[in-house]
Image (tube, rainbow, N blue to C red; front, side, top):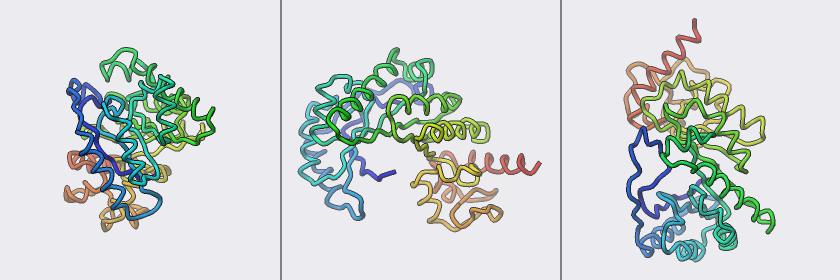
Length: 292
């Protein structure tokens, strides 16, 4: 996936599992000048093609009172690709969708918690949220097609123990809504990775069957035999930067892996630090199961 420099427009109100993180925190937005300065710095320090690319993230950008000025700041900073991280509900308005497209927003990063209202809406704590969100993405896609503007929609699914069983449905919904890529991001340090793997693999298969690429962030190479290509670039880069410690994995040259006694900082190259112990146990359990 294309790398974007993330610039937070504020905090609070993120699309996150309420059972894992509690109720949504109040939304607060950063000053326009402060965000514009960070955009300029990100673009000015960009060191490798393609780019520079900026994603306005952190919380819903359409709630920022000065969003047009932020988009303008990105254009002035010679941002090549501008992405909005959004729940897409505001895109239901043709004025918002069309205005964003004409201003240069050709990338959306759209977050969902599941592929059905019974999962997404319940975990988010907002009835009807998924249907409105899908409607917004379709509106953005439709207007882009009418104006012959090429766009990209990435669906991000934060994966936890409460939605892992719905990952295939989430991938299917993303395809149906118009996404051209899906990112499964493992965010739950207590998730049983061994039990989660069939659902993750099924989501990858759902994407492949429908011609949409599904990537997984937070899983080491050795836990996805046959599906290692689906691991995100971020995982590949972090894994490749460390010497191998598995010693019995055919992907040792690339994979930092997990081993009894491996240090937490080695395991953290693949996942959040809180994931380290669980990751080691899951990898070892998966190997024992395959050996049997």
